[in-house]
Image (cartoon, rainbow, N blue to C red; front, top):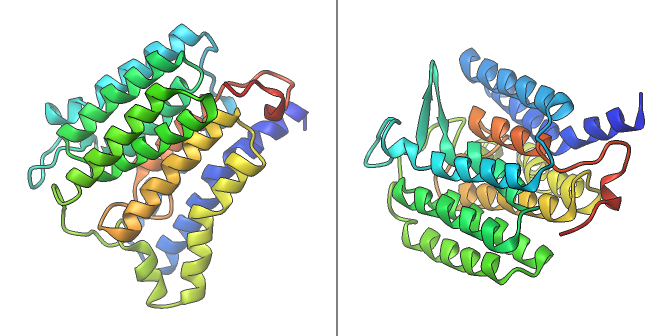
Length: 280
């Protein structure tokens, strides 16, 4: 196996390991076969994109693509189903995809290499879409990812977006709360009812292993890895403290596809380790 192919396989690990843990959870707790098939299919597609997909390295192209992604976060209010005053989803045939976990990872990676002001403007546009849905977990994830970008790039504009997004997450926290769905929300407490050890292992797959592969021993540029790790931690933390969907370890194709899209879009140079790439 070539060094480049090996690097691409390593790049799948922050997605592959927690998602496999989620499939093990769904299987062990006898989730409906349809849920297992949806997650497995999403994981297969995401891994194929990480291994073979490419996004052009041109910064203007990447910024424009991020802008379209931010605009797409406004579409659920017009096109998606509405449940209890909440419109967060894209209809996709037999499944619905939550827009925040699907698009935020890709947007975050794409703006990491953009001029700081323009990148922050795109994130602000995304934040407006999340407020309209409303999605407090998405806003918290956007806020923490923006804070990571502010730290890595020394960007004041990112810091401002982070502060506003976190304040809006707190303001919308009690709005749009839906009835928890088994296998999607409350995943760790569900596992802990049967085995605290299994719950601890699953939590490590969500909160520890991706951080190792995105921050400590990354295959991405520093800002990209830090922002993705912050996004994942925020989504997971919000799922722990309130009935929000667990990313990757619970049922849901959107976060699997979203993080796969983001990892496949990371700015890489053929034949070079990510550690040697510029950090801003």
